[in-house]
Image 1: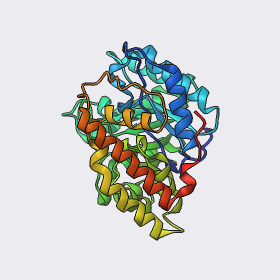
Image 2: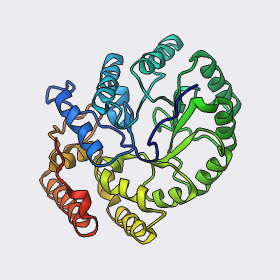
Image 3: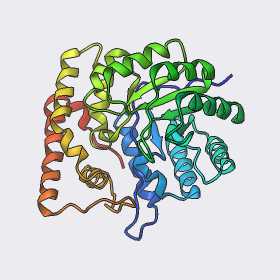
Length: 317
């Protein structure tokens, strides 16, 4: 029997990949970044995802990053990472086996890689059924990844997939940004092992109230501690949860600006020693934009200090 993912409810940051100025992975910085997330109270780590420069990494680099995430976590929080990448079906399947062998709590499949864009829902279900048969007892996740094309899974289809997979489907990163669709997915998957993590910040609180297990999106690279607080308090302290969501809505435009470079620079302001190098195309921030980013950082710190001082403890990195 597959053991359940422990401590799954809460925030799962989409882990960035630190690069050195020469473009190679900066593993010392990566380890410090992972420790920072964990110290901020995250529930799990989504390593090797789109924010990690998924398609700009070599197969060996993806495995090295995943291996390091498992080692640093050392069982403190679960770790998931993307698989099913390659140029042939054999390479895609091998990437799933390779990821699973590292001790992933789930190997997450970008749904857009299972079938071509023109394929219908029945073709997607058939591809998923085949994948289950081909991957033995490996626990899987699903990611509604926007690249190379954005495919959303309708609630009824997701329910069929979850009931078919049983304990083997544990994680969904949902990118529909639609509370009604999220509610439909949660109803369709009721009674299964699948847990839904919303990637959309503005609907985060609403999705938690509907039954989502947490948040997994880009904003967790800016204020994971505040997001973790929201996931913990939304039932018992609705006023605090409302204040947090209002603050997130107010600052969301800063998160979206020149991401992921802005996130790396923001984290550097938090004391995580990251360079701003990105393998994905992303413009540099000019002088005025850096002033704005530092003001954004100061604003987040001030909000946390005044409303949630417990979130500003010293982080040992």
